[in-house]
Amino acid sequence: MRVLLFTGKGGVGKTTTAAATALRCADSGLRTIVLSTDPAHSLADAYGIALGDHAVEITPGLWGQQLDAQARMEDTWQEIQAWLLDVFQWAGVAAIEAEELAVIPGLDEIFALSDIKAYADSDEWDVVVVDCAPTAETLRLLSLPEILRWYMDRVFPTSRKLNKVVAPLLGRVAGLPMPGDDVFGSASQFYDRLDGVRELLTDTGRTSVRLVVNPERLVVAEARRTYTYLSLFGYQVDAVVANRLLPEAITDPWFQEWKARHVEHLTAIEDGFAPLPILRAELASDELVGVDALRSFAGHLYGDLDAAAVLHPGEPLQVLPRGTGFELTVELPFADKDELELGRRDDELLIRVGSHRRALLLPDSLRRREVRAASLRDGKLRVTFAGAAEDPDADSVVDRAATRSARRQAR
Image (cartoon, helix red, strand yellow):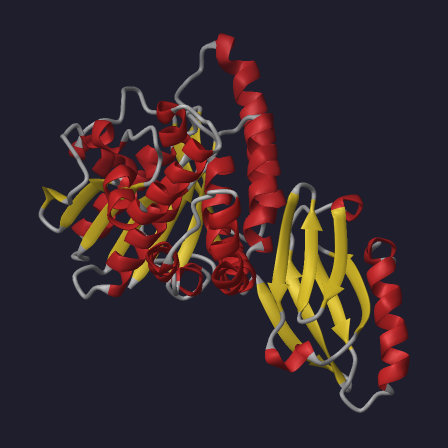
């Protein structure tokens, strides 16, 4: 079972690439479904057929679907939305505004994740191809399982306990609508929908992300940042698609400057993303719409490669023995030392790269060990943990120092 996620800056051709890859997988005999999680769905346009919220057969062996988050939200969010609506109206918010505010931004992405997992867990499909939203939304989508788990583990149990104590008092004194067991039950059901999603998406044997880029400076720069942040959250990128390269057949002098720039940017892509394979696709002479055009595109893109295979093995996160202790390695390609901050809180390692943060839950083997050192070398963050037999008092001093000055140590 394989899950392939395609993302990239808006307009680089990720939908075309995802659609062509799904067709390639189906043509090889794999039962394939292609999903769109992009709110601005264009998957149907790529195939030239109508797609909706239910899977539709595109060709033998290939099915497609454009997810409708609203329908899924009505199944799970009703009780929570009704309570939020009461709270907003109690606060004096107008009815129409309260109804809009009762829907949390990002819910569509959460329900899209649950659909991906449902298809992956079924025995009906060999490959699930996902046409993701542009990179910023994709990063938010893929960070949701971990972030939601953090909030649910800490806030949900506490809130439920407090509700039993505080709700009767606030209800009598202030008239504030308090959540009942039905609301907490819906919240729990909502959380259960995502149970196991992160495990699926970070399983490097089952799930791969493929970045689609054009040979343009801004596009390549964003792809590099995306690669860093995906690695930060434990997602494996197994290939980069360099799309819309000018063909050698174009000899008009007007294009010579463009061709020179494309060669320069392609070299930067190959050098910067090594050892990832770079799949090349030339600029098409016509719009890539319809099964025949997409099949031809996929043939040129993959050649003799198996589109569903893991094109580059790797582990974004590893724990290896080092002397009497251990070293935790997190791949952070292109991360800058000046953007990196580290901290330690209980059984979590806190990592911040630029504006993106992750609370990395440490493996059992590391939770009781203290941090001894941290460094960023060759695109990898290395955090050394003390051996179990070392003096715990000395380790604590080092760990506190590491937490206070982690940024300096990372340099």
